[in-house]
Image 1 (tube, helix red, strand yellow):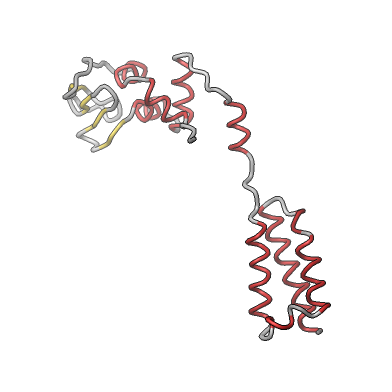
Image 2 (cartoon, one colour):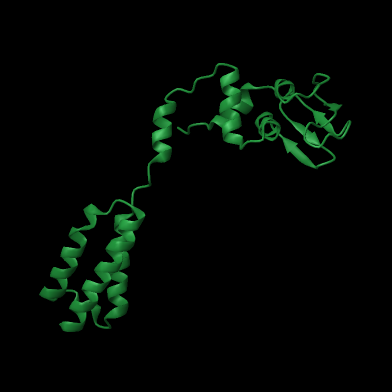
Length: 176
């Protein structure tokens, strides 16, 4: 199940005519084939053709969704404009706080990919890696490095773990 963005929800729930009014532009209403009005973005008379769900400015050669028009008129990015517009119609997203927390959370590190990166490094650093990986000292060092992967949480941790693990394995491979 995909979650719709607030931008998409606002574009569905707010008519272009209503967005024109909120943008402070006079609209002659809408009809299926469109109505030409002065564009609130460029100010060109008759340049904006207004449809029920969007507008097209022939002077700027630009498509406007309701949120796109409001973002331009309110001088803000589209996501904050969508939130403001939805607030004006009383829309409260379900689980908004939960969605915000999910958006702020850093992605989980790909620990398997880090382990693979270390093994690939060892294969490049040691010409006989296929047999040396089974030496007690080499496999022990590898196990200790891989055992620390559970502590890797951030992008910086990934870089640090890989750099230190490469150093450790490089030393072990040069000694054995």
